Amino acid sequence: MKMPLLVAHIGQMESYPENTLLGLEAALQCGASYIEFDVQSTMDGVLVVFHDVELKRVTGVAGNLFEMPFDALGLIRVSEPERFPTRTFCEPIPTLSDVVDLLQRYPDATAFVEIKNESVDWFGVDVICEQLLKEIKPIQQQAVVISFHKEAIRYVKDHSPFKTGYVLERYDAQHHGFAQQLKPDYLIVNHTKLNKGEAPWGGDWEWMLYDITDPELCCEYAKHVALIETRDICSMLKHPLLA
Image (tube, rainbow, N blue to C red; front, side, top):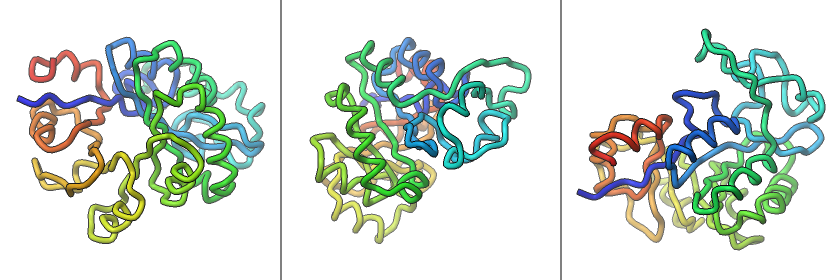
């Protein structure tokens, strides 16, 4: 049976708050060969590993990244209070540079670095992508830059040797056309947008599906796709079907 390659979706997020150094390193220590994380920008242009623009869901504190300088984030901690109401975490919002440093300690790991649409639209594709490419240059052989944002993918392809991945908002003819124009190295989509076990579009790309925590479903999709992104990589890697 073909074994899927598993990707840690914003870290070992089943056990730890998303996009934290704690969660990302936990996934790597479990044996993850691939991780994925999100990148946004603060008001003063510091790239941070964070999913939302608003801070409330992930930190419990009201605030907007685009209206705050990085220094204002110093005392704010990532805790995901709704998801972990009985646990206490004291994780700072990591910078992209922090995660680059982490990955340099795990040179065999590959990172899918997602540029978030909101930052590209707010600050401009040139500003965000130029800074991101500069910061991830030390892990050039380890990183794939991914995004829902077509112009961000074009910028990365035009200005760097980094591999790219296009994340699909919808699995339809229009987005198939976009993929054929962009020619990314990877196409990425939520597995719920496909029929169970369906083989996705063929092309000169590899597929990654998210977010799957069912080992049997993972194996079913692995017949047709190279990579499966999961929020619980530590458990998945230990499962008899996937070990």
